[in-house]
Length: 74
Image (cartoon, rainbow, N blue to C red; front, side, top):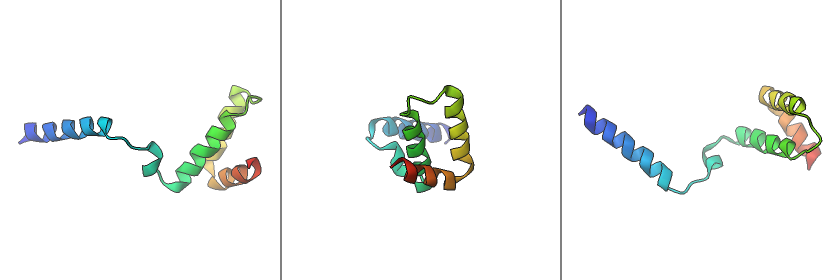
């Protein structure tokens, strides 16, 4: 029975690699907003690595900061 369980898991993993899907489809909207904001910040060529790290830390602490940045950057 354990071997059949392992076989089922391996089949599921293999299927997940071949089934086309979008990573963000299964992500909650708040996390999507955070990902989009981080991607927008990463497109800013004028920030240092340290500044990128600080912005990402702020985004992960408070979704209101993500919302504010998103509104300002649009």
